Amino acid sequence: MLKNKLVGLVKEEKGQGLTEYGLVLGIIAVAVVATIGLFRDEIVAMYDSALADLQSR
Image 1 (cartoon, rainbow, N blue to C red):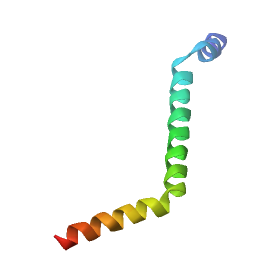
Image 2 (image 1 turned 90 degrees about the vertical axis):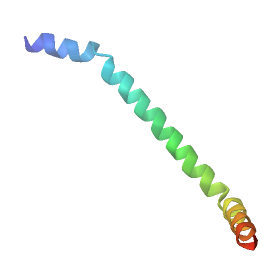
Image 3 (image 1 turned 90 degrees about the horizontal axis):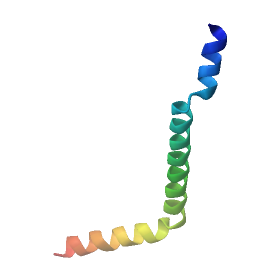
């Protein structure tokens, strides 16, 4: 019975698929954070420009 359970766990692919999705989401999150970090100054400048434009109206 225990042997069958262990074999079932090894053959189970649902957990493997979920792990792969988690890894992909983690990689995407790291890429987004890195991109924001690289373009931080440009993003802040665009935000400040938009804020100044709205305040001048």
